[in-house]
Amino acid sequence: MSYKCEICHKVLSTKHGLDLHMRIHTGEKPFSCDVCHKSFSQKGNLDLHRRTHTGIKPFSCDVCLQSFSRKSHLDSHSRTHSGEKPFSCDICQKSFSHKGNLDKHIRTHTGIKPFSCGVCVQSFSRKAHLDTHMRTHRGEKPFLCDICQKSFSEKGNLDRHRRTHSGEKPFPCYICQRTFTQKGHLNRHMRTHTGSKPFSCDICLQSFSQKGSLDAHLRIHTGEKSFSCNLCQKAFSRKGNLQAHKRTHTGEKKEKDISHKCDQCGMILFSKQVLDRHKITHTGEKPFSCNICQKSFSQKGSLDSHMRIHTGIKLFSCDICQKTFRQKGHLGKHQRTHTK
Image 1 (cartoon, one colour):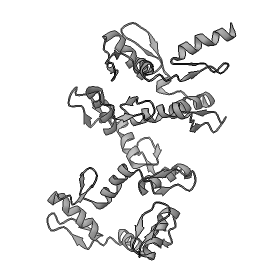
Image 2: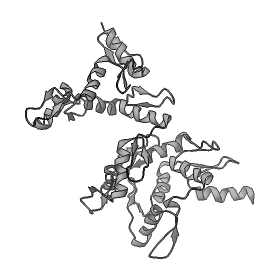
Image 3: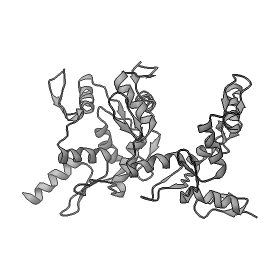
């Protein structure tokens, strides 16, 4: 007899297994460590955790003599010597050395997000992502920079922040030798060389080089404004716009609020990103190309406006007569016919 979880539809072979599994969704952790009070959903996990206090590591690697507190950790470690990857994805045949990594990978195909936040109902494909997310509700930032005392909710963010002090840029582009502080920044940069745009809108088929750009674009279709100011409740479709708006309340100035001068024509721009885009107008470079008619543009915004010729999408609507336009400038001209 099998037992099926009504939330994520996982099938368990025993009722006890289902009861243990349900704690993933409920967040119940009835077993608590009497040393540090960390709690666990299963007694076995508590027993394993207690070894972190006692220092007992009974499982030793025959190759490098490294020892582990858990047999499963030794088994996983041994594969680093053998190169074995016994866990293979049935969909794309990618293989993994750890079953847990395969399980996480499979969710990229299925889209299942079994770990739900009880506060805001946001869901996640990984338990670790939910744990990190919960810190945003509790305001926890346990990772502290020992140089400037700035704190972070994630260790990865602290590691990236530390590079701002050291100046370290460990990720180099093999084409133009430009270096980056973060692997994700290098990946995005590489698309400027390859022209790859792997993220495509299902509604208008416009494609993007970054997932964040696609997410922001989709809100144009849905009208969603998920970023809300906690001071005046004004809502925005992009997090960056909300952050800029908040500074109107606090008066805070950031580096991107400081003016930047073009060394070619002396024009003043108010962010380094805008200055970099502006400099392209002097070089004649046109890195943004239409994948339908191959026309190229020096500015990403110009390409976006051009794409609407192909898609027929008219994003800008007159709030007086509801007439729609492909470009914001055309809407502005039209609105003057009402205001005279």
